[in-house]
Length: 238
Image (tube, rainbow, N blue to C red; front, side, top):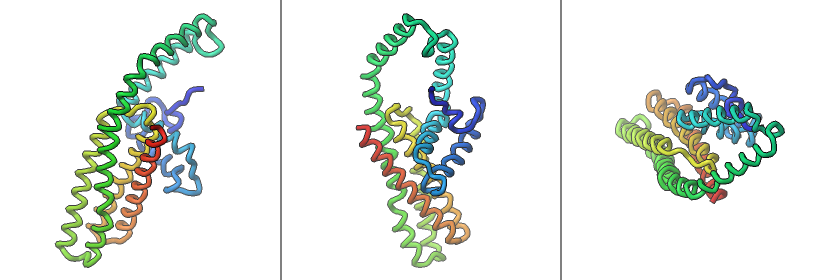
């Protein structure tokens, strides 16, 4: 039985991108160990991430919908297991094998391109956002009500926004190879955490409420962990 990304996210094939994003965020909070330890489920969060990696991107979703339609047509024509005759199944298997052999060189090139043009620069931008946070907070702690210190902290957050925007643009510039679906999912969720963390830190600069400062720090910590998970996943694939 093939996986159904729509069923994984509990949405219909007619769901809007906003509805898909909302469903993903709810499930991610429910199953991710850093968000909810009581309902943490590593296998389920992996499925949810993989589903959103496809459905969360309009181009990937379009390709996935076309694949679903094609598989449905094959099944209706009698090519599913146990329905078509042996000659049909043999012909289909040979066609799949030939296609796989033709696409191996292209797949290898796509993998190298994605690692060089997407994974590496996105990972580096994330580090440039996360790493200075402690130093920035330590500097601000000298006197949070000092206008110049607060201005410096706000400038840091503006730089974070700029780097995040560049990272998101790069991330969506090239579809990830299938073998890197898990890595891409970790990166995507990492960027989400960075986005939320910057927002919390920006709230702190408006009202000086330590709750937002601590929440921002925690979200950055989670983002750093997700980046490390992406690194580990790359090593496993390579």
